[in-house]
Image (cartoon, rainbow, N blue to C red; front, side, top):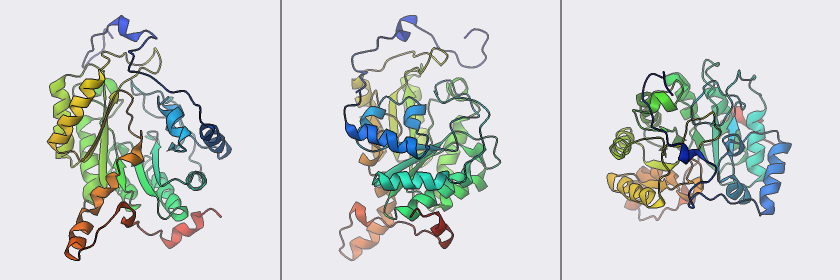
Length: 337
């Protein structure tokens, strides 16, 4: 990386061979549900981040009939050093994509769906309206589903972010990805404090009635004190859910792995994060932002005020009692028969 301005990373060529530590194991597909899910996604002409980002858990998740849908195309306007999604001039948005995603969630009988997207800096709203339409189409077809979004930063345009929050996702996820020092090297055009601001504003826009979530990758050369500072910064931004996983190099053209973090360190960092005040933490070598997303039930965060009121009346609320925002009349046409 000689001649590059900004933060530098020491590189050990021995770390970038095909052989990885014993704790980095990827399960191959052996469940017929995996193949039926793949067929369904192909049939509906959908894109999943599971494949585009080469997620190491896609065999397991698809085998369980779950997936993270990537809307707004598979071509990103940014070129982040860690990401396997292709960088190119994006195609036009597909008007019927929200309905196709909704149909997929219906056929898969999902109770929890994650909707993400490439960065669309070519669009004035960064794709925010497309997120809004997809959330609303999914809810119109599956009124009881828990909806999680994993969004880009929309270039910190509040009016665009407001469009997403007006659709009332239960979980708002925007990844910090790495520590402040490494952000200019790791994330194309993104800014550390901008991401923190987006997370904080998203929660404020709905009066706290959303669980906010973020994730960081380890193994890019970050220091322990920098990780702890990132945790504190996220808590200051009112984030309650944290994921931490090992960075794995998608191709030789991407940033190298500086360190393979041992599972025991991930366990230690998880406990530190919980002690600091995060309500939910997933931390491990193969943890990814959407891995087992439904297991953490972070939507419980938005039940706090309801529980306070219910306790006065002696009620015992359960996750299934979570109120789901109603679909607006304008969205009924998005329903799939």
